[in-house]
Image 1 (spheres, rainbow, N blue to C red):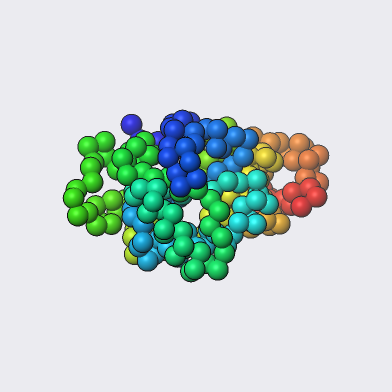
Image 2: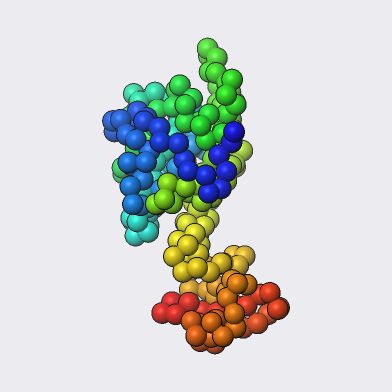
Length: 218
């Protein structure tokens, strides 16, 4: 059974370049970004890990931990971090799971249960291990997105999505297309006009089912 939005993530114990961790313990009371890669020392993935390293302050600001996954061993991860830091011009302080046994890739439904790594494998053998998962403090999957090997992930969009999730869950609202912090939010249809006015003050009725407002103190 695949992992779906609002499913609790499996509490796997995994090996990383920084030692053994339990996924649930690692999340703790934080948000977590889990981002996966089909193989170490691949060009697109190296730039992506570099982008994550450059955003260290942004993750911290949002109370969010980041955890990489790659289908190679611990020693390769340690060597690869040198390349990542050279590309990023920043320290790659996050751990990377050594998923050479494919436990994480299978548990998060990135590879089928019968998948295995052939001798002399290439990144194409684990090409679908190219996902981003955002996990909440409740250990539940909040968002996932998967990219092909030829298209680098946009971590500005990952940050934007994280902001949207933290705002929607924390404020009980929804966010419209292309929303960024400070923009108007959508008032849930279950909130009456009277309650909306009491909570938000002025709001705009675009359609009977679409009302927008500024968050108080936003």
